[in-house]
Image (cartoon, rainbow, N blue to C red):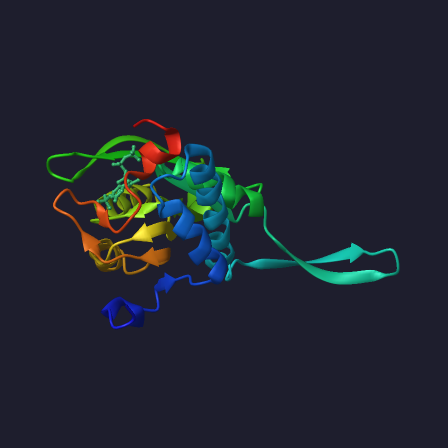
Length: 217
Ligand code: PRP
Ligand code: URA
């Protein structure tokens, strides 16, 4: 895999860790049930968030320990926003919130047209102060990259400049599309799969993430 050209792009981050590999294996398994699928998506989202927030700005603060004052550092409560791409992105929100409980949450509604694989926009609501925040856009699947690229464009149109995208499973096509359309955006993925099939599903992938999360099939 590492011969793929985007591994040389500093904006691309394939987050590799034994825990992520283990959780992904169970997530992909076709007999994994809805409850377990949702728990794993949350957990992998949390591990991706750890990596994606490595460069968050810190503020100096003085804390009274039981013994003396200590110089400490905190992340500004206003630093982060989370933007799931509906529906399946909702499955990653709680994982991010476990690490950043005060992050505000926006929503972007996009679905893929089954014939064309093109994203269709139906909703966008961001935090009022979104342009002051680093927005973590979350979606489990990065297939053609159309949905993620359009979502990022929608966010940029509203004045946001600091955007990171976190996905659980990605295809090379989607990675190339996002890096080409949005060279300023950092992309974090837990898995880089082989290819897309004729219906733009990721192979080997995990099937339809929204249906597996919400039990709709
Ligand atoms: C899935 C997934 C992404 C998109 C990825 O959503 O959650 O948003 O497809 O595909 P792309 O990279 O080719 O755009 P879907 O359209 O199935 O909607 P859903 O989450 O409501 O099920
Ligand atoms: N959306 C999904 O849910 N799965 C895929 O494989 C591709 C897009």
